[in-house]
Length: 434
Image (cartoon, rainbow, N blue to C red; front, side, top):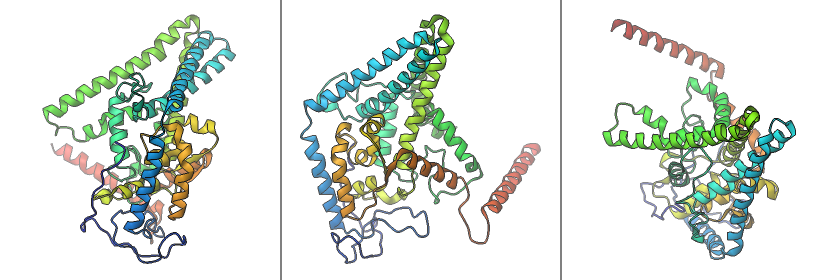
């Protein structure tokens, strides 16, 4: 899915927004008409970032963004096809060379070079190739080997499951609380509007563990394991059969990748079995940490908006565009940085145009930034280290209860512990009576 279908704004969906005089002379200073896109207000001082936009402004934004997209999509050609084919060739050469070097991994320089190369190859395959091919960015080439329906990536999650949860769910409901589960993957508190629970105190540790084993966390998420277990005992026979089928597909994929990385390749190394095994473990963890870092920096740094669950009711094309721009953030850096992130360092542009060839995001980025500046829309961007610090600070902050006047966070935690102990005693008493 690329764009949400345009739907008319209904009076039921509309929400009154206060007028404010925009600093940008491009915008009218008159009060905007009723518009319905609702940003979840996370802080008492947080203003609605689109309150100054009228429906006419939003329609003009949509037309301009459509024109930017059309210009690129109409100009796709041999240079783009050469780019992705050369990228695939280079990635495969790096991987095969690195695996060859690791056959001599008992020699520590060979271990370092091979492990570094294998890590890089896995990152490129996941980010610039797998992710983008499965988005359909290269389907226009009509190459059956480089097509979203045929590509299977080097990741624990089967491509069919990932394409549904990512392409369909995430890109449709970007940063909508309760609809976009990529926002915290259902295991983290991502907004002050989410009720705080005692288990969120472990959120920083959970986040780090999830980053280390990211591919397996994504596989469980794409499988829908958490949701299935929550509804245990309430499934139809058809739902149970469907889950068993998808579970079998996931186990098969994990087993195949693990056999290659943790058995066949180490066995081919002969006496260097253990160093090669360790190299594969390290390469997968490096890939997981890198992938997780890029993804969380695209949607979780401070300054990026989250949206109410009902915010997409009656959403127009222009409002969908606004949500993508306000709900995403970029990573600044060199060409190499952009390449190694799969051009997801251009996260704003990717969310506006998920099926646009990734090598063209740098081309449209200045135009998108100019549009956002003219319409007084905040463009979140920064170096990777800065975005990561922002994310981890936010993860820690949201692991604690909200600040409440008349009490402290420590007191709220103590009270929560007491409530949990009381519930535990009651459960034990009920079991004893049985």
